[in-house]
Amino acid sequence: MFLRVAAMGSIAAFPVFAYAGGSDQAANADEIARLEQRAIRANPREQVYLYTELIHSWTEQAARELADGDSVQAKATLERINHYVGLIHRNLAHDAKRLKVAQELIHNTTYRLTSVLHLVSEDDRAAVVETLKQLDQVNVELLAQVFTH
Image (cartoon, rainbow, N blue to C red; front, top):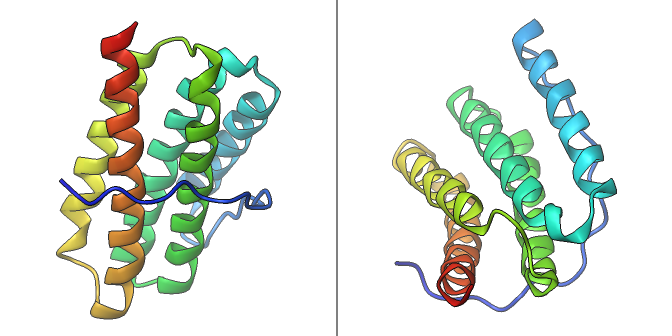
């Protein structure tokens, strides 16, 4: 398990970027943008789950970007993940719904990003490890919430 880290400060909202690579990536970017807007507008009790869906989608995108060697875009995507992890931290106090499903999705997302870790260059490793620390922390918090409700 990774070390716990301090809760993040506020980060400005990030725009959605479709990167080159065909219509599948553009369609995926459009889907993520719709999910992002839905999460922003959602009831605070629903946001934790929606943010975990976003984190999962961003992680898949970061994995593709890292596999393609697009370090700059991958780091930006990892920053987006960290932003939404921070939002989950703040929204757990709202008696969130679907906590168990959210926790399982974060667990799977952490596993996915961990599987990418051994494929990244040394330059990208620090950003991936920091994101994994953030995901681990929110997973611990979600587990605590699941077992107290």
